[in-house]
Length: 169
Image (cartoon, rainbow, N blue to C red):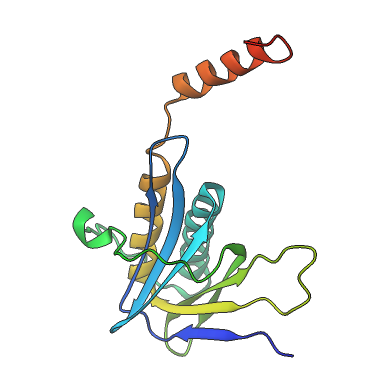
C-alpha cells in the first residue's frame, strides 16, 4: 500500500515550538492552510536540523538561481506561537526539503516514525511554503530550540549525574 500523504499546498502559516520546562520540553512543528491545521511531534535536534537545512537551501538557491535571500524578515512572537489544541498527527521520523522552481516554493516533507514491530507504510506530510515563510521558520525554530537549559545548567546536570552514577543517592 502507498504511503498515506497529507498535503498543505500552499501553507498559510508554518511554525515550530516547544511546550514545557527547559530539559523536559516537547517540540512540535505546526502548519496551516486556511482553516486546516496539523501538528507534528518532533525532537529538539530535528528542529535545529530543520533550521540548518532551510538556511543551506536558501543559500544554495541564492547561488544556483540568483534568488535573493529575504533580508530583515521580522515576525511577531505571538504570531509564531503554537496554537491549541496540540493534538499531534504523528511523531516525525525523517524530514527533508525540496524546491519547486516553477512556483518558487520550498517543500518540507515529514515522515512518520514507526516502531520496529509496525508493518505498515508511514504517513507523510508535505508542506509547500514561500522562501520567506521558511526563512522565518528557520529563525524562529533556532530561537525556540535555543531557549533551553544554559550551558552551565547542562554541565551541572551532567556532573551531578556522573557523581551519582553507581553510588546510590
